[in-house]
Amino acid sequence: MSSIQTIVNRINQGETTARHEVEVAIEKANANSDYHALLSLTEKRALERADDIDARKAAGEQLGELAGVPFVAKDNFLAFGAPTTAASKMLEHFDAPLQATAIEKLEAAGAICIGKANLDSFAHGGSTENSAYGPTKNAHDTTKVAGGSSGGSAVITALDVVPFALGTDTGGSIRQPASFNGVIGVKPTYGMVSRYGVVAMASSTDTIGCLAGSIDDAELVMKIMSGCDVKDMTTLPDFFVPEKTAKPSQKIGLIKESMSEDVDIQVRARVSEYVDKLRANGHTVEEVSVPMTNHALAMYYIIVPAEVSSNLGRYDGIRYGLRAEGVQTLAELYGKTRDQGFVTENKRRIMIGSYVLSSGFFDAYYLHAQKARTILINEYRKLFETYDVLITPTAPTPAFNLGENTSDPILMYLADIMTVPVSLAGLPAISVPAGASEQGLPIGVQLIGNHKSDAALLALAREMENR
Amino acid sequence: MCQEGVFSLFIGYNKDMTQISRDDVLHLAQLSSLQLSDTEIDDLQKDIGNILGYVHQLSELDTSGVEPTYQVTDLENVWRDDVVIDDKVTREQLLSLSTESLNHQVKVPKVL
Image (cartoon, rainbow over all chains, first blue to last red; front, top):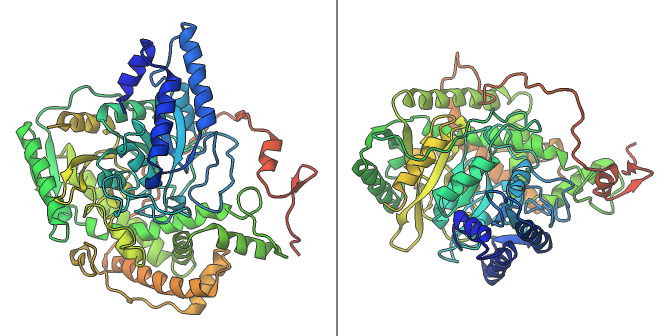
């Protein structure tokens, strides 16, 4: 698949049509169906939209910045043309009555959604194995996991079916699968992109971003999606302005807790090589410490389940989604619907949330974790007084085997240990490809910036691209 | 990777640290409106116990005098004009999402 700019230019110059680009992408998606990266194709609507763009081109109209560019949305974005399932049985037949703001903005720029990507059910997981419809396979080795929860989005991008895909990132769900599949994954500053119309998981860390093959493409997509939205009161006033070149001689901190001996030796080697390249480009890299890194996963698995238990309370079988059959009472309807509609990981998180929020435990778990979160945020804040960017591996290992961690939720959670602290602080971060293991599995490096430094972070990633 | 104990430096992953009872699980299920099957109750009892054991490591941290963080945007009192935003979604569309509706209302089983 060509870059966004190439597709747009060729359509504008009449060398190809939107319809042709969409047909090629759908053909490629079908040819790669063994990876199970997509849950549905939005073929009919995509072709209609393509024809509309081609007609407008023929009429001499000015086309949008993404005119005719096919993309894939994670199946927790409300979008027309196919059900929005969140990879759950709860929403198996849910036809969204409206579209997410992110989708609306991309469509207004001319982009065309061709399908919906697989994910861990309700985005709960780090391998896409919690999908109610079966796992997605890694783009580089089909015995390995795709990562998650945006596993389908990462794989479909890595397979070059589309130039970009949308994902959501609550604790690493864009960055970690990007790392596992060798693509770029962008998680913006919390509040940069509207979450209206996206299935909520944990409201204080949920973000929307993209997976892409190049920084230029990712930057353009983020530019179009970003900005204040009256329908999402957590969105910040628009601040994202792309920067053509990176600031020279940046001060970069390598977080030492992320390079401990527990981290895969090949992952550490690739990060060290990336650091060498940063230095060769004139930047200074020093070892820094974020001691609370070691506690972040524990905080996360108190705070996020608490928010999950609240956000998933809406799935009651009444207004939309699954409704259990053969029940007599309302209580039975709730209980059976939720039992049938959620996968085990959903239930685990809801119940842990109920536990940490219940009277008697609230102060010891939830309140305590939110205080610990303040300490973590202050550690980052202090570092950003001196450093422009922080760096860690994106994940402690390359992609692991399918089935390897499914019986032990905590081992599964550890795959997000590098990304979770960043999410708790609401900072922007990008996972960039940094080579591969001896087995040929991609390895990613995570670049972390201060609040609202998204554009500067992308500029640095671009400077380092292909070095 | 991911053999047990690999992450010793990442503090305190020690299986079976916290036990919660089957009654605890049933209580949590009730609070969560989940009618669970018997086998799932057993699995959840083990997993939730382990997870609570893992997160319990935070108790060693002194947070006295620290303010909690509930949100990271520093936005406060976000207002908008009190006018209806037309999402172009009709009542019929929304009602059609429900399994059962009657006379423009969502139908549910008897409450009492």
